[in-house]
Figure 1 (cartoon, rainbow, N blue to C red):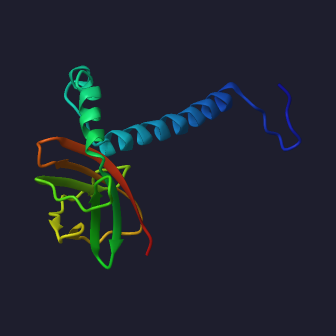
Figure 2: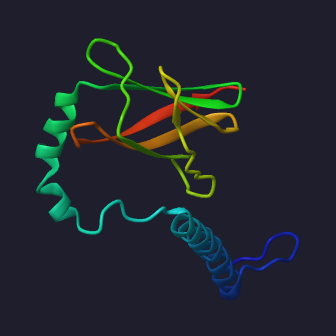
Length: 156
């Protein structure tokens, strides 16, 4: 190996230090990203996906037979959840459960209590700007379970 004009001579330990430093940064970043990914993972949707898949087509057909359309909006601190039938008429359900949260983590998840006002279901909820998911489960008067994830985009 040659010597530069400044008198610096590249030695083996310089190269080793460069490699160790570069790979150290890469490993540290990967570990940080992996830890954050695990911390924000909300968990499993179902305990056994195979068992859940056995009823998927039947459940989907029953849900589609209801002919419901779902729409959500946010107005003046109230989240509205509109459930309408094929004719566009409001639907009153036997039971409604919803979780409102961000798509990427569960830290801001809330379970508001929606009340039917004759037209839509509404709940007082202050949401920040951005994309929100409403993961709802409604039970029709005939006992049919209706599940849907409704995307709500809030602009402030």
